[in-house]
Image 1: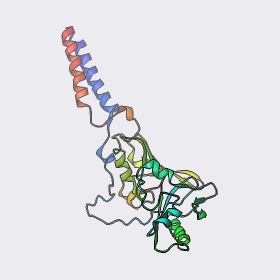
Image 2 (image 1 turned 180 degrees about the vertical axis):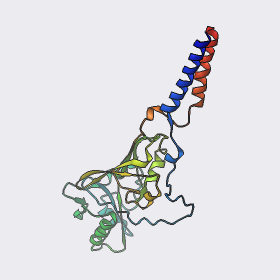
Image 3 (image 1 turned 60 degrees about the vertical axis):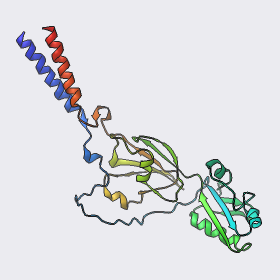
Image 4 (image 1 turned 90 degrees about the vertical axis):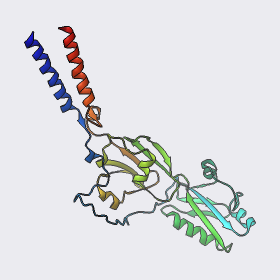
Length: 261
């Protein structure tokens, strides 16, 4: 009986060892953002000049408004909603926007078609301002990209599609909108799917490294898809070592053994 008891106890310890071996904790080094390879604590300024202004593509929607001291003149060019129209919610802005057609043109009231494919928002604004300047003086042109959406999926707390209302947003701001990554996210290989004129292309970035601050993918573009992959062995991983589970399992087996004696 004694030898049988020793055998069971040995089996319990083997079980605990196997649990510790095949289940792993996610180390903090795999969760801390912006790590420096030289482990320096010295603060440095990083100037990311690789930001590329978004180039308009067919299917984009532009909100264009002409603001003038003359209300009648503004309404003439703004197709009715005028210079003081209250357009605050998404549906109203979308309905009052102008779509870039397959040929790269956008058609504005009384101005006609303007070729905007491949242009930035500022370039479109300058182009429209030049045309309006022939008819009105002391005017201001407002141009905004309407359908600015970003999708984030995978190992984040709130995956989904998010609307962006600012001209520029970086990857950490997007992650904060989604509630940050989960413990099991593969932070060293985040996939960014970017749409270009030639199709979609995947890029992988490491946000554990501070080098991301200098990357051209630090800033997120309209219609980007961010996919956060899970770490390998996610099903067997723990955010912290399961001491309670191991001790409880051993205690349960010992209790059962004591009762069965």
